[in-house]
Length: 334
Image 1: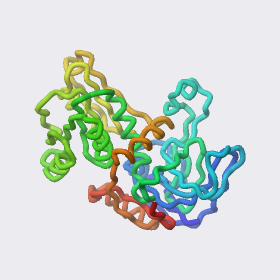
Image 2: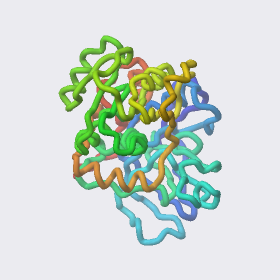
Image 3: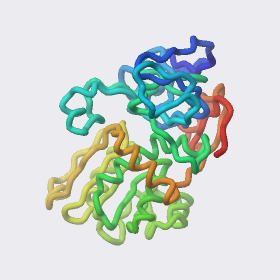
Image 4: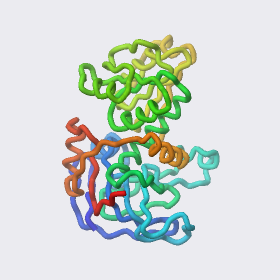
């Protein structure tokens, strides 16, 4: 099968013919239709995340069809079913975290497109426990970005509780998806972008934000919560200063630059800083239930599999206005 392979970080992916994988017990063999490109893929290629499996097939926003079913899988999947494969690819199911509903923190977890091969290939295998049936409303290109930007964004959003005034720092893929749910649920949305990025600020207002400005600005009202999607540590103290008493700052990325020091007074009055790690199956079930009701809409730009390096390069350079989606095999329209 064709696959785009990372041999070493900081090197381009190589198009190769590699053996088609075979599913073990509890696994599905999936014929990949599409795979969205994520900033985490860039972090892996650019050596910002340590110890990836090498050589590695990237990709963890995978949409495909079940081609073969391994032993031990009950009736939840059948050959031909459309499935989505996310970042969290395997957990031991036995540790204290797994047994307490916090499988996202499993010390032995494995991750799709990082510690196990992912979807920049014609076929992939996946643990059936961590595959999702996808809403019929979306076609294979539209739904791909929901499998990470949507899922991790949703977990970040849920950590804000019932915050009425919600700030979002960094208005990229995840932010645009979660903003739609926040507005659907009646939140007041305040969007922070790079200083001077008037085009993105205008886009946020057109979506429904009550205010949009630079990340160096203070909002007109104190926020009950803020989500930071940009991987810029300096935004953490900036967001703290924008919070009302008892507010929370949620760091929604897997990688962030160092957070600079800040006065304790900015944290006082029971303000909270928290991170978000991975996802749980419950997050996925909840998100894929609400997404088609909103409906959450994605904006995508497609590339053939062999142009994965082009998609990554454009992402790194900030030249993508939509989510890049690799089209690997025939795409089905729902």
